[in-house]
Figure 1: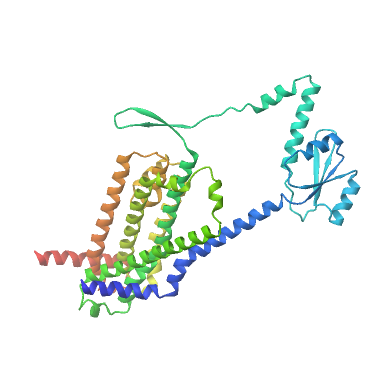
Figure 2: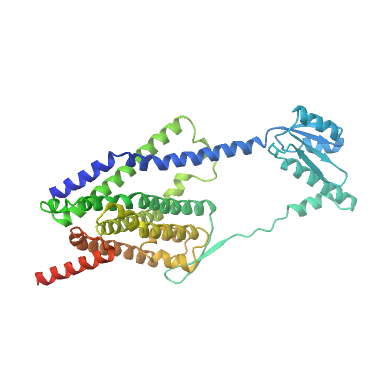
Length: 427
């Protein structure tokens, strides 16, 4: 057991001190920062559309009063003619202008290289004004017309759930709760995909590097193949836990800094309490964590197994491509499940162990799967991890000493033949 820990610590130390590990930790944070920065600048550009000078041409005193009562944040300037408005644009006094006519319509003019101003508030106010004016011309009561416009036919979504005793109960959909559930499912799916993409290559490289250097005979003279394999995987698990711990520490630091700088004041303006929503979804969080752990371990053992099949580190990239494609396929099915959790592809994919961590959280979030099916999926995932781990360890003992340039299938055949001969020898 001491030798297993030596292998684990050496694997951990070598990878944690590398620049690639720092990029794995901070790379996603940098990408998130870039995304937030883009969103921030886009928001500022949108706010810029609410700030500016707008000219109004041919507006009567009554129309001016209507426009002044609108909620527009723009600075307004009333002009007498289009020529005057064009001169104002050239001088930079206004950013654009509305040319009104007598047919309850207008044209908006601006420079081609300037963003449009937000004139929706003015448009809404003028629309209401002209509707009332038309009603008066037709001899209709403006107040009754306003009442008719205020009539909205609403439809409430209600889910019907059948209990274990056969009773059917109604559940009104809570938009905030649905958003929280979907958000949890999406985060879990993305995190699993991120870890798989990062660590599948590392695991395969770790196994293949020592095999490619032809020093495995020396290593295995002092430690069993099983302990060596498990030590490598334990070292990778320790790296994953270190990355998670780094995110937790960074999250706590950012939380306290944001709280002290009052950056989280917008949370008080939300119509729901974020902490309460998370506490109400403990079941989903727990199941999502189980699926995430089983998913990461499944791909970890699979990558270690495939890494032992190659004789040169150059072949690792070709070998892990199928695993990568499987993870990508599972992730895309999960993204498809965002909008359609009852699709047959989604339902089948949620029960396939390599796709389960990406898809099943969305089905649970949408309440389109029963607990019996959920626990069946958990059982299948756990059994799959155990089976793949057993097969990986079994074949690793033979694969790790097979050096062949004839391809993966040849290595598998030779490994299988060796395992069969060992069984006969044991008998």
